[in-house]
Length: 552
Image (cartoon, rainbow, N blue to C red; front, side, top):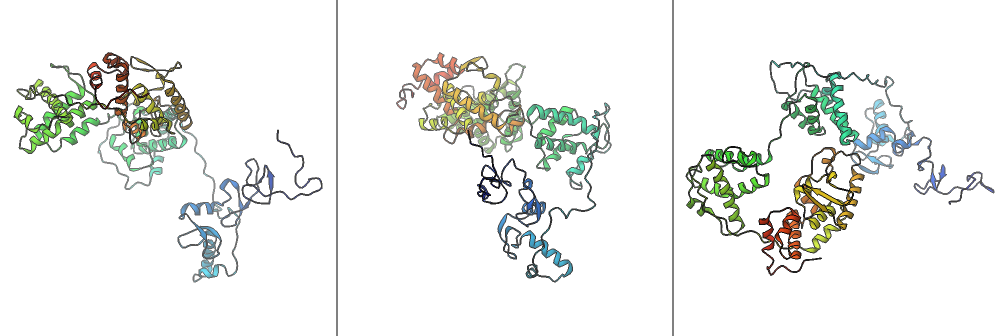
């Protein structure tokens, strides 16, 4: 135990004894305890003292031993700290090199003598002040209005006579427009905001910004029963500090804003990719895109395809479509097998990708009776698949031993168990079990010991960074922590590092298992959830000279 001293330095036997200097600031005044003075000790209540910038009396530790005037001066002026050109006192300076005390003294001199100069500021000494005496005598604290009773909007809907576009050009500001909101309706919508904040673990700052944004849009309502529109909600994008997505979600949940489905990303990408093609060709591709995206129950029936498949097929067929449009073809009706053979690249992956994209396009259009025949029916893709080869072990080892818990866990889950990017993005906390297993669909994966160690470290890191988040997904970041959405593919690619991708790392793991099992395709299919055709892609390269024994 640490010995306790029963005497202060003043009452010390044989004293008084001079106390030692403060260990933090070096002051020999107001010694308190533990080697710290009364100004530096966290448990002490120091008396008021002089401001460190202007020497005004009455500064406290709450404001860092600054008066409110000097604190505002530091915030408004550029962060220049040096000796004042007038009084040579080290303090924050304005662009002219003058401190706040000299600036205040010069302002007082100019009241009596408009021709006063900076040299006269030090002529008769400087006037020090008492902190907080420049507040107006008529200042009265603003009373907080009573909290209004929440009342839901009326059941009827008020029709608009003139639908005019709203603008913020002639508004008095965001706060003024938020104050125009009907208080009872704002209190009713505020209940939805508070519930959402408690469920998702929002911080106080974000909750306040959402309240302001909601009241801002409610201030646009001209009469009871009027509904907001998507155009009104788009005004929030002009105010950078208001969260547009959170505000619109709250208003949609309250029923004051119609729900609008976000535009399909693959549709937006496809429309931009085919924008330079002829109109007739664009219309045919739109039919193919709708069937690939939504599927069809008409004969011939087809299931919806994934976004990655649609992008792969269209990006493969786009060079051929662009070449035909450049040659003067305006529609796909006149395409023959010779046209396809003329635009095919040399044998390889690009040739196979183009053939698969064109076959999908012509097959769908022929099934919809938009084409008389399929010109790509007799054109078969060759064996041009990319041979999977092992990765550099050193790059994988660096990612596994990374100081970033997210990077280490991502690499471990792929390198040990071969998880796909979609599995990692949509992996939820409920899929983890206490016995060290992971449930993905109908597969039960027993996690390896190195993966469990990195999982424990990441869960601790996740709890420390976002202790109140309500996002159910395992991997989150600063933006998804306040929502329920999953991370994007770009986040996973960025965290794996510059030398690794999820696809190459997964190929390396499956290839290593194929080498260890002697090319058992059924084992690969059951272990990694892939088809037999995909499994044979790895077993077919066992005799490649670049492959050796599996790396331990």
